[in-house]
Length: 70
Image 1 (tube, helix red, strand yellow):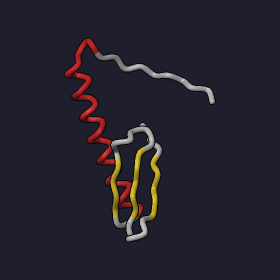
Image 2 (tube, rainbow, N blue to C red):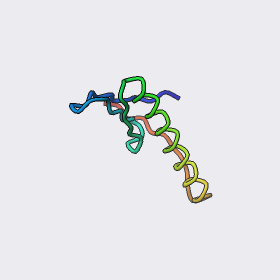
Image 3 (cartoon, rainbow, N blue to C red):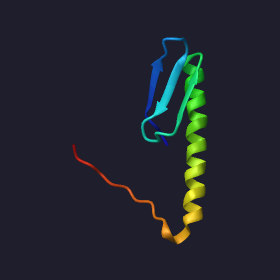
């Protein structure tokens, strides 16, 4: 699955990276490449937590999608 990442150069050096689809998936790195690798790991961690939460909720949880026309 592809995710949209905001990659920003930081004033103090390095880069920050944030996934738009998963607000909790944020990371940083000294280079763009390192920041992207690190945010990929953050995305995997957030998805793992979400998966565990859904399993915990069991039948009370449901995943759906919506389409918004802008």
